[in-house]
Length: 279
Image (cartoon, rainbow, N blue to C red; front, side, top):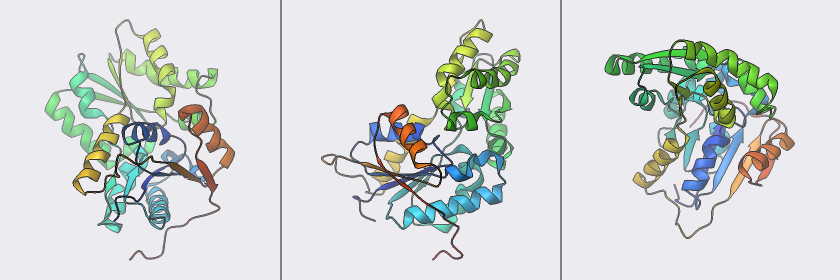
């Protein structure tokens, strides 16, 4: 693969923009292709088989556009499908989003950590195994909280609405009542409502609440992988962003503009399906 090739990034919708933001800041010389599979969002409401099928279809779409690496910028897709994507494309560097359980365990004083994520992420074998492993090593207890409906609110752009605040209060309150002093944002959509999460957690707790978002750590890991494979673009180059969506083109344009102050070329993709066979 050429070091001048773009990096592919995908999510079920706009959530992966929270990761793209860090990548664009830390690797400004890289060309980025972002794919929002918004017609199928949220992934958290789908089965592992469906998520794997969509992930393979998106990966194939981006491979055909010559990406040199693939970042699965979705916690649900990482837990459900990253193994099958790596098996399908063994020569492609594939980076996933790991929930920040380990840094949360290191940060917590109460030894109680709340994990906010989609139902699919929390029920995945990958998440449950990671939780068990870190709990055994650190004596930290993880309270898992599925945030049903929250991705939908963020996709609609309702980052500060009363309905979003009501949802978050419903999900955060039980964690604070269990003495959680650290909250893990286990979905890439959630950093966009971090100000609201911080406000609600602050209102509910007399003690400071730490928030763990792994977006910056993922961008650093991507840089290490590219460097190890001699795939880093020349720092003299100025990178650009191009986007694709199976959903509404205008919605993604507004999200880029309002959330990242970026104005990429956006192409609407009518339909993609998992290839019958992958060579």
